[in-house]
View 1 (cartoon, rainbow, N blue to C red):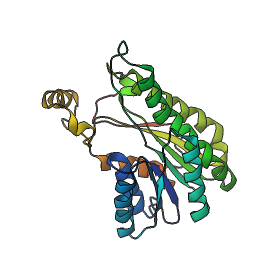
View 2: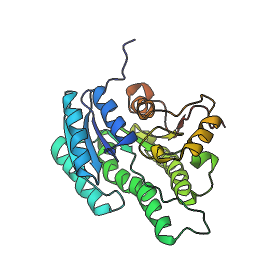
View 3: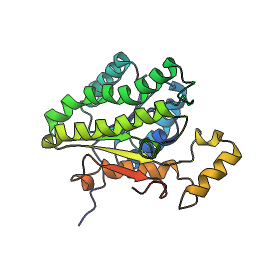
View 4: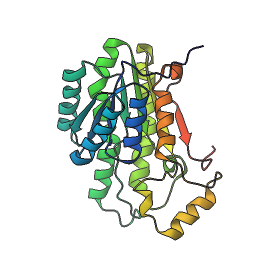
Length: 251
């Protein structure tokens, strides 16, 4: 059988695409043949990623989008539709952290994380879904987190947002399955990114000690999971949470 993990002719939108997992997702999808719209607030970094996509022989579109603002999401998605007439794949990766113990967490930090990580995915899904329904095809992949399944002190806002994202994934998957649209989540564990690179050495070593594979994952390992869920080969998978965590969470 010929592999169908080929995304030639597909249009993908990746939020939070300026660095880390988002950048890796954009590049891996482009390597598989997709043209990619890159969304983020950091236009300088996005432009550099767009050049990397073009070097792979694919088209790239840079979108200055703050996913917590529905107006910028609408404007960005409208630009994609103007340019390419469709969206086949949506990767909701944009996210922020504002860690603190719940007793010390202020309402602004709670709201900022929920609006970006959870509301932002909702806004993006709302914008692309009508077109996916009309074309009777779509792949929506939401980036959750291992801590949404296992818990972690000091991250109540982040965990609430990512657990909500898993719930959103399953609810939307049930709503749109009849239209040949799949909705899945990828739940990374501790991944070697600029964010985790800031961890103190002692914390880093402690994390490694509880990961069965004994190392952090790479952003490309997460992106390969996203690429699979975006492919034809994953056409019978929906409402699923794909754990990519080195065995950290096995429930």
